[in-house]
Length: 565
Image (cartoon, rainbow, N blue to C red; front, side, top):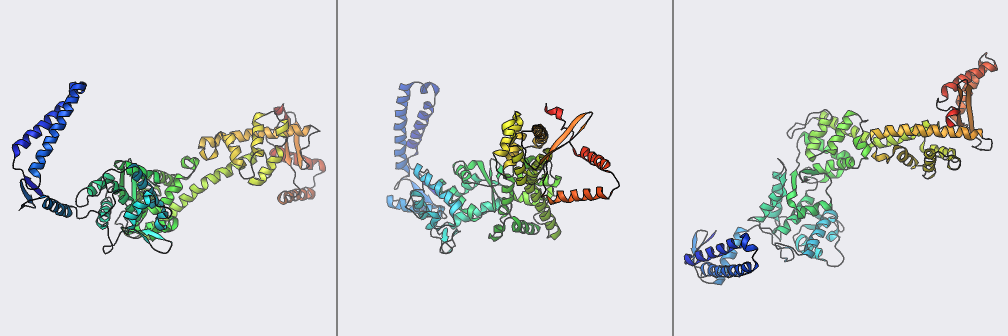
């Protein structure tokens, strides 16, 4: 500590009071609206401040007053000694300050071009740390200057092989820019965040103060370096919400508004370690290659990304198993990676939370692993199952010969060809247009969007019901159109199309079907029926009566010809 006792206190006191008085008057509302008075007051305030500065220099400069450094009296004779003493004091006070010799960034406020360069450098650190020079191999832009003066000169970005580079914490014997204490302070901050997440501003407070004295524009750069070095260990929170998949835009916001962010480190041991290793092996093997603290975030990040990318239908449908829906809720509402893996997922699977000191239990690890995989597989299959159900609904509604997507499209393409030219039904024509305007794979999405009134990925369970009603209706319309078309002798529906029907007192029920002599399954059933009838003692009339009874049970009730009038 440096203490100076001034020799002439009275003049200094008068000057201080003069400045304070002028400053107080300048804040008066009546003075503020009087331009002439305000101009005069501003001039006098500047004169008072100049007088105060002169007195401070006279009382506290070299050769004046009594100087004490660390409790010892020092005879401050001249400016040279003054500079030497203060330099020694600051060297001692800021013994851990990094030795960055670049005026571009070692300042309280950056210029616009250097701010952009810092932003670009942070983006490269996040995305290109494996490349030589972070990919800055062409030209010498401002971000390259920052890279050379900080990362390269500080031994933070080094070559592992001829083509592979990595970020590292400089070793004690190779730390030319004295980054070690800064990285140690950030690592200690991460460790303190194990118990509870800490605001990022707390790190700023530590690094701005002695013994570090880091300039504020450098702090986000050091933080991002340590975040990448400890990738997967540290979770980020923005506005108290867990950020599952941080992107470059988030770090841009972090640089500008650090007060909106917090961090938390996620360690593991015992049973937690075993579960982490099992989950990481299944979903994120790269997390097992990290050194030091287990990269819990890396282990759960693929699951979080998977959950976020699920179609809206899968994220909200209630048709899944209760256990899968609980796992889905845990993934979508995750607040912290360690809580998700060790508390929320086990709870979703009906298991107790896994404490940090829980002893190893292979049965628990197996139960969580199997249950989690089963739930994720059900989530993964939910949308394909919806697509399959949509195809099946179409096939059943039109009485198609196949439920296979491509073959069903080919059949519908043929059956709706006449609809485009001869039908006046707008809904049926829209259906036919979707069939003819889509390929053999994507046609169902187009038809589903028409009949479900929104794209299939964004459906709700209610939209599924709407689709089922609509597809049944359009199937009925198509069948009735085909019946009317076959009744017209000039209409040709194809050699393999047959109209079958039954007339009674209630009217006629009929259906147009496809007769395919090459369908082995259909031919096998026909041969069985032929053989059964041939072996029976029934005459031809009785045999026809049996077939009529079968036909009555197969014909839908909505195919009466009167409906098409």
